[in-house]
Length: 100
Image (cartoon, rainbow, N blue to C red; front, side, top):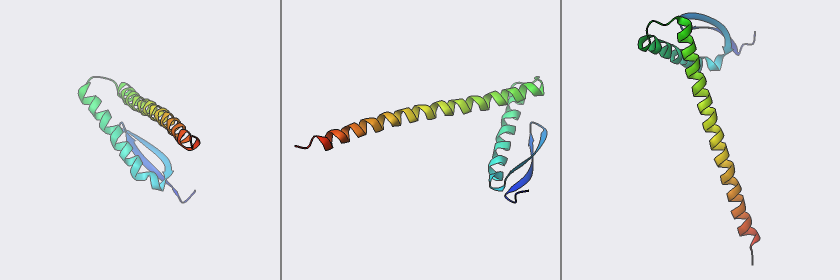
C-alpha cells in the first residue's frame, strides 16, 4: 500500500465506515465526519420519529443542496468575471488603439 495512504474508520450516522485516504486529508475528513453527525443529530432532535434511512436521506439532501448552491454561485461568479474581463480588455483596446 502507498505510504501516503492510511486506513481510517469513520463513524457516520451510527455506522462505521472503513476506507483508505490520503494522510494529508485526515483532519479535513474528520471535520466532515463531525459535521455530518451534527446534522444527523439535529434532524433526529427536530424531526423525531423518523426512520434512520429518512435521516440519512435528509442529510444527503442537505449536502446535495449545499453543493449545487455553491456550484451555481461559482458559475455566476465566473460569468461575472468573464464579463468584467471582456469589458476591461475592450477599454484597454480602446485606449491603446485610439492613439492620436
